[in-house]
Image 1 (cartoon, protein in one colour):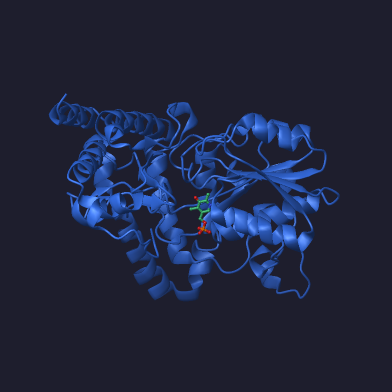
Image 2 (image 1 turned 30 degrees about the vertical axis):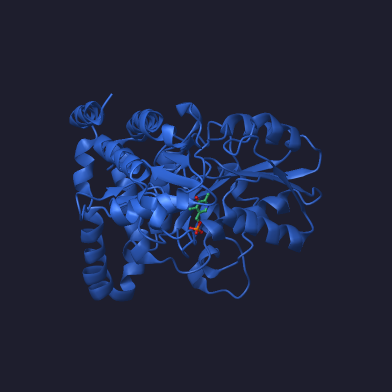
Length: 421
Ligand SMILES: *Cc1c(COP(=O)(O)O)cnc(C)c1O
């Protein structure tokens, strides 16, 4: 088969796409740029520009400090309440605050405090680096032991292996990234949460690569704790504050290890001794970054308007299409599928492997106007962000990668890794 039938197919899918209009809600600077990295930094929503203009000119510019009493103070809980609708939680179980890394640090400490006699923390070797680094620091400081479950195929971690490790009787905490950042493999939240609870352990999920792209059922799975990122599929902007979830019945039992004044009961009484605020407020630390915070809200609103079920349906169709094109055009060049082939077991990005992946990634960016990203050692990640990714984008990403390989365009690039990939 030649390329055009797939292009026709892509155009027909776009024409029939009920979410197609959402693309117009985003700034598309260069229509020829095929942006496949929405899983790393989501695009800029047009209404975020208007919202930030309003926030800067009228709220900061004119209301000045009165802004705190007129909507700013409530923003972390208000926007958290909206995110709750995307992760299957109650409105008062999610708060927007700090970075994912800092929230992870806070909740790991808090969880370990609830199981003081236990030493074991269970995680896996393909977890996101920041999670691993923070666990290593905390384990050292608190004399805990981390058990890393290894991947069998470089793509997935068998649920059975995790469940077996959890059954060890001094497991305090299980923490996993729901959708793996490299392969896109998705863990079975229900089975793992059940196993943790059967063993008397707590579970902390990192939802950074899931939220906004795949339905999540925290309450339904009885999950204890979660953190996640807002600048990927939620389009909150670079470095936008993250969120954390604590199941309602655990909130009063948990201690925030960073006892800042925004987590203090009756904060403006300015009392000298720390007393944690009720509910999620205790998981605040310091003054929230209000401009970035307000940008999160417009991003989340768009995802809510599109509906997570419809987004997921489109994402699955697009990653399936990408895999069809990979099989046809790239597999013959030795490109491997480094993501699960079953759509039920993966999130919204596909990793393709090749020994020359770094150089192919460079050629795609510099000559083909395709922006995926590279993840060590040999993965090129193609993120599908169903709010604005079109089927033709998926087509051109694969067609241009085929051109790079067939014309060997990547071979002139250095094998040196740049500072940022
Ligand atoms: C992107 C991502 C993060 C980001 O953490 P920051 O503190 O915002 O830098 C954390 N965990 C996972 C799994 C991620 O994908």
